[in-house]
Length: 109
Ligand SMILES: [Zn+2]
Image (cartoon, rainbow, N blue to C red; front, side, top):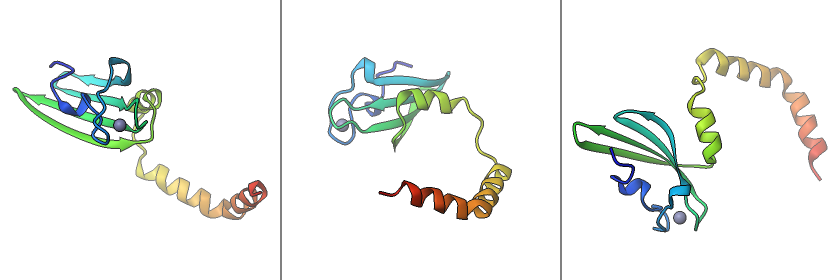
């Protein structure tokens, strides 16, 4: 599949500025499925673009993101957060919320 088969990674959907080769990063390539990070040089918005080529039929999906390209590449290889990790984080925050509030209040001007 050509990297330029989809309009999704050709121009910014917000301001229609054409992406450059330097602003489109291939994050993950799994043959018929590819994940890109596209950063608009004009409006500075970024997007994660998923493109799937199945027997010549191209499906695309774009999601606005605040990730930069390096973070997108780094996070693409991490395993997803599982339910136990979410519960552990919730319990930790619940137990430490008073400390967290005190830390935030100290940082306030
Ligand atoms: Zn733009």
